Length: 253
Image (tube, rainbow, N blue to C red; front, side, top):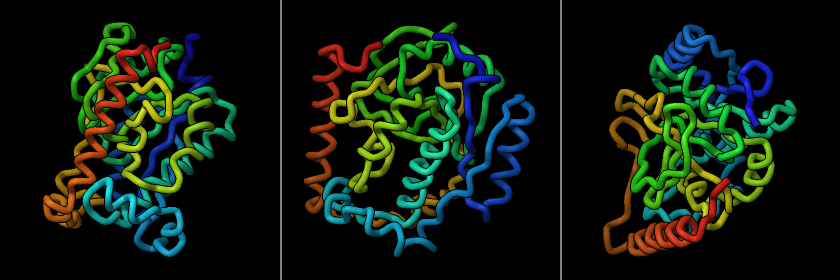
């Protein structure tokens, strides 16, 4: 199935209303690239903590990450889920979801068109990443490679998501037990085609000032190493589970 941006793609930018400069930069970039979008006011985990906290399995989160959950993590988690719900109401077959610290490369529109031309090969397609370790070639889209990843594949800055996955995955991600990108990387549990388009046509640059983790991760309070053993075990289990799933042919088109 070949999709076109004009008639088959919804685009959303997640932005905290107070992050005015980030919003301005995103709007300027998207206007230059000719990509229409809908602005989604991000859910503020700090001001809505009491409302969001019941969706958090705090004990599991601490065990699997080696630290307590941050209010901003709950906010961004629910922001993505809320965008998926809005997207499902449109009837569009795919959505482009963007966080507000993405920097687009000049070939982004071409890469986006190539990705849509290969829609039958992916359920979620990342257009940038934080980590993308040990790629496994799954195909191509124009001059780009379509890769799955045996190693960690994290980051939710820019991605395409198919309608059927948004409908199925959203409810499966609650309660919150891990950051959303780590939970989505558990493809052996959630069973979907989680690919990256390489070379990535955009990257994330927050200037060292994250609205979630603070300046240079200043808000992150990790447990001492001996209290993070369960988190190491969880990451290892994810790597092993992904390896078995992918080598057995899971996640193929």
